[in-house]
Length: 182
Image 1 (cartoon, rainbow, N blue to C red):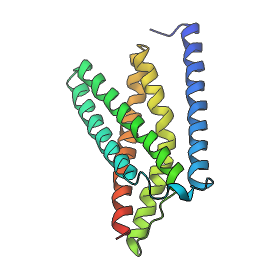
Image 2: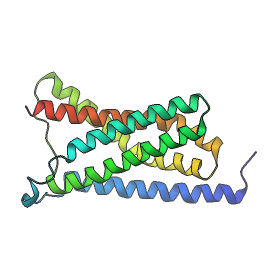
Image 3: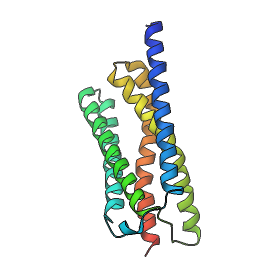
């Protein structure tokens, strides 16, 4: 059944707002990581935040896989719970990530040799796909929460693998940063 003109206009407005919010968030994160100078007074505080980032990314990835399992079994209620759980974990990650970078700045990779190239390939793909994942996740949730299930299903096919990749590579980047620091 085709969408009414009012519904289509509502979709466009909401999607435009989501994209604008996502662009603003990405620009803020770029500033925070590459321009902002972390205050030295906080250098030794809350040093556990990168571990929280990795944990919440890992839990988001698990929740995404569980949600995928449930939707393939047509268990919509469990799917929805799993995806909301993944969203909560990703949101906790984002808050922890922002606080960590505001307090500590960026962590530089200390490894050498071929692993350095692997690290940067993973990091670059992670960063690029993060900026794509944010609006996709929000749009996918918008369609689901507003009952626009055909649109939800259409975009979720792309959102899930990107979101999952970003969550998993977040853990990989953390592990490589900490292995390279030793």
